[in-house]
Image (cartoon, rainbow, N blue to C red; front, side):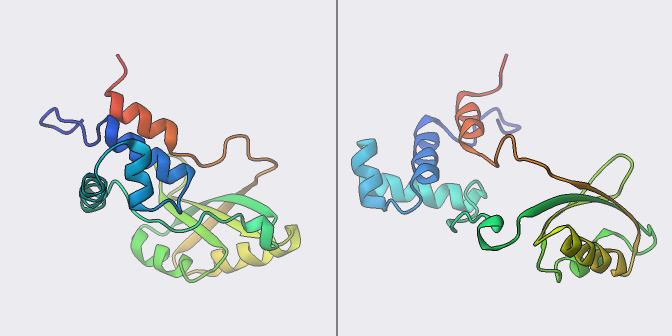
Length: 165
């Protein structure tokens, strides 16, 4: 809910997002047919959610392992505080194997999700990360298996229903 007590999405928005998450290539016309609503309503809802930042993209989901990057690791970085997070993040964004970078609380300053072709290749990626100006220290955890893949549909359903009570 927003500070004014209104939900950012309702049940129809959630149904639309779920449909698009399950079948990203479904068109507006087909979505309107399946949801039993007017095409203009679907388009207006999509536009509103895009403008609010609820929907951020429609790109394909890809599995890095399918094109040779079978190792996933999470790297916690300590950075020099004098330079700040943004310059370090910009340098890390230049490394193709760095998929995500988050500023975090706790023992480290930033958390990176990276991929590599092998453990030896992970060393190359880690060396590139540590060489980024502003990085002081890195701690790496290699993912052995993905127990729950990135998902959004349960969260969308929960958001449409309101806060748990």
